[in-house]
Amino acid sequence: MIQHTMVRHSKLQKQVLTLYRQFLRAAQDKPGFIPRIRDEFRANAAIKKTDVMHIEYLYRRAQRQLELLKDVNTKQLGSFSKSKEDS
Image (tube, rainbow, N blue to C red):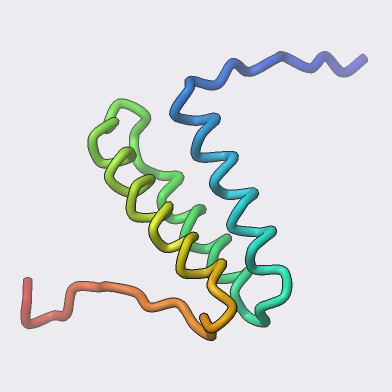
């Protein structure tokens, strides 16, 4: 018999999951966006739960990106990454 345990999520975790679902809904009619969204959320899933400041920063940034994604004129998402010269 398989026993399922209920996992209690924090308020912030619930907000992030809701944001993820909103991203997936907003990207449904925009080709190529869903894999990018999944990759971004999976990469950030490795952040420690105790790093609340970083998670909240990423959450606020993602909310702004979601608003851009919802715009009818949005055709692609930009990304920011450190170049080797910056290191």
